[in-house]
Length: 415
Ligand SMILES: [Zn+2]
Image 1 (cartoon, helix red, strand yellow):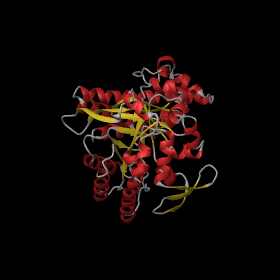
Image 2: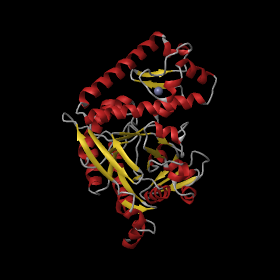
Image 3: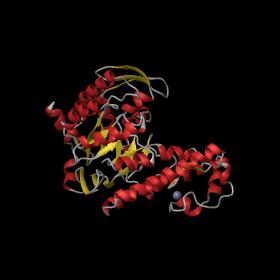
Image 4: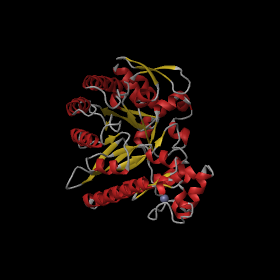
């Protein structure tokens, strides 16, 4: 076992790279909100430094949908998420490894985090059987049978070459019983140990950069289970920790409470990642509770459906109400779509089913999210986080409330 671990840690090209350009993975907290738990930080990876709080666009199948990588870089994105489940099924992690790993395969120079496939195996695939060893499921693509284990998840993520690897955890849907939550917490702990053992003890130098393992705290909406899960996983002394199993249909106050409780249980000097969250107000509220990293399909998925984000909430640009509207999507936005095009043009593109519609809307939404994160970071640096966050939240909620009222009245966004 010890020899096997050594062989994972050491391989040919590493000594040169370690002595040269690529720094080891690190996280530094650079400023704290004097009035709360929010913090400004910096992730150091073998593929660049990333300021936190950070939002990671989701690159499901080796692509952030509708976004060429240079345009993604222009939004300020420096860290993206790749989905192990999808890449394992198609084109296959071994093929990606053969072609130089996921960074090279997709042509992305920034940093990369891959998920463990746990969430998709438990939610998307046709689940057959969960055992202590792993999960048997059928592919959502062709019905083929697969057996996923913590070790296979590590094999896939090491083959893809991501900078941050997520431990394979037992995800439960919202509404699980206390007994089910307790069992999933215990299994998640045992699986995290297996992931650590299959992943060089949690840190692996390979291909010229260091890859690190993050564990995922489970526990549903039960405070006692969250505490148990966090205590066990923190004991593994990994490079970072995620808060999983939220945003799965639980009420918003429960999500906030569990985020705050779990973040406070995690080591102050390590990055904290809230998985799958969320709406802009969820992100701001979670930064205020000490979260550093976020991912969500929301900005890209909404964009493809013709919905864009503004400081004052969502705007359904494909609606008839914008057919003659010459203003940009968001007057305060400096993205290429807003600098050049009107709402009327975007509305036309969606009506005509032109592929440029989703492309421009995605460009705007991701630019908008990254601007939001940059605003939060600047506020933390200036020790003004509380006031800035309150102003952003008030504008967003006010706009969303107006939108709901307009829909009830049959206004623009209803058509
Ligand atoms: Zn824009």
